[in-house]
Image (cartoon, rainbow, N blue to C red; front, side, top):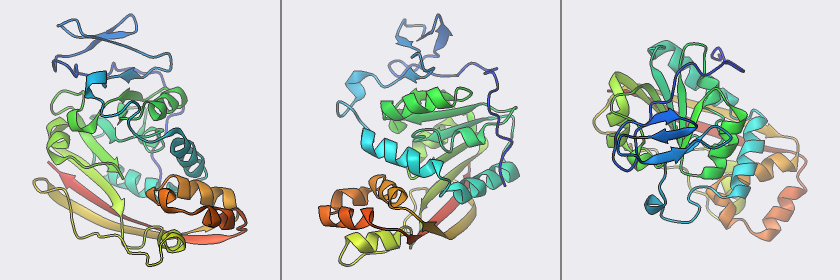
Length: 279
């Protein structure tokens, strides 16, 4: 199943951002977002806005590095995670109030963001990595993207009817704040066997993911799904991209990289847990 993906609709709603410095509403004028206290944030030529003031950064370039971004983009474009997207969209179609805004927490290059866009909704994506947001905004101009931290989101209270987090930090208090009453939070986390075959090449004793803990305590669990399927690779490039977009890459030896480059086929499990909560 897939949503009614809109390729090039005009943005018919202005982004509803709030100032990260004083929490007042931001208004777009002359390609600059300004608040009542005259704090100003310029809209980049790609269309996104950087709402992560330098004093809030913990490093010069927070978030994923360029190599990881490029690898993830190449891998996702091949459709290996499309079954996950289809499952997410099926839940969105079943439960959501389609008139309310959608938010992708930790959106990366916008792979999941743009597939939630329809003719009737407004979709936002936030990531702390500027390079990923730049790619997303340039590629999917019908969604709103901003650079920001998930721990202090640049949105007013109760703005979103549907919020999802795919492998990003799950911050219940902040997510709940921006969720509308009866709004939904969908989390996607690795299940026991996610990428187990890849991990087995790297670690002497590969451990399965611990799925016993959930960071959500106050919201109501509505539905939980397990999605497991096999990914069949027929070239080494896709396997290397998969490795590069995971934390396993830092543990991979040069000899293993050389082995992977010689692969002509590889099979690996994708294994996800989808949990849907309601406020």
